[in-house]
Image 1: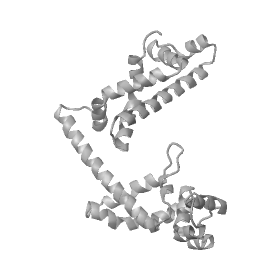
Image 2 (image 1 turned 135 degrees about the horizontal axis):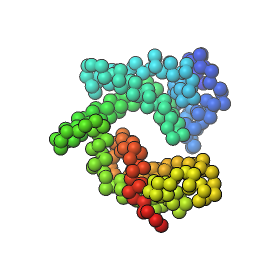
Image 3 (image 1 turned 90 degrees about the vertical axis):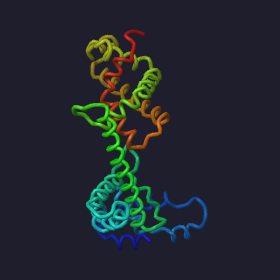
Length: 264
């Protein structure tokens, strides 16, 4: 099977051990090993593994020989037009980009069916999500514009900020309360009292670079906790949650100065 996969994709220099580990992760824990292997599309798995490992030659094969085959499936959703190219590009970006240390989504292909069929299904989901996103943005623009003119900014972010302001304030207050005392105090000294890194460092008898790291870590801990709490509270799509978090990050410092007490 390995020889067949290498013969199918002769230009891919994928280490044998790398692929065998990848293959083993997709085998069932019970039942006949030979039967399980026979059911897998090993040559497609080999290409997917090479793509997730970042091999440019493998990603080129995906671009030229596989992704163009999703256009017909996208056309059934979008009809004729130029949407297929946009969906293809979005699908490629989504499948090959790793976030937060997780494997890229293409690693979700298990090899139980042809890769091209799996890609067609993924392309249809991408097209539907894109259509929903466009409809939602149009609805948001209509609702925001009906409340008065907006000068600059992102309409959808403005709408999400306003709609979930109370939830954000509550999640932020809870996240701050969950911080260790030192991190919360350093945030207060810097964002509420307006003390410089040097002044705070002198108070803690440490260098300002250490204080800078404390602040950065505290902000990231707060953002992560706010994200967790909002995901539990709000029934948002992944795209809406990401948009809301972008808005939160942009206004976090101002919100900290409002929520943190002047003294503890």
